[in-house]
Length: 59
Image (cartoon, rainbow, N blue to C red):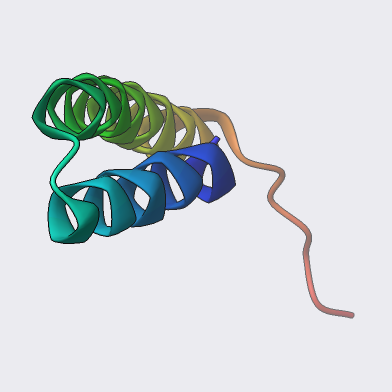
């Protein structure tokens, strides 16, 4: 998902450079939404891993 956020970010940068304002705004919006969704998934996974992770004992 972070990959797609970066892809849309690059598309928005290229579109902005060439003057396609509407495409740049849409791509930047999609990239921003995907980044925040990725960030939420990362935090939820991190908390779940810390809270219920496997606890192996060293022998």
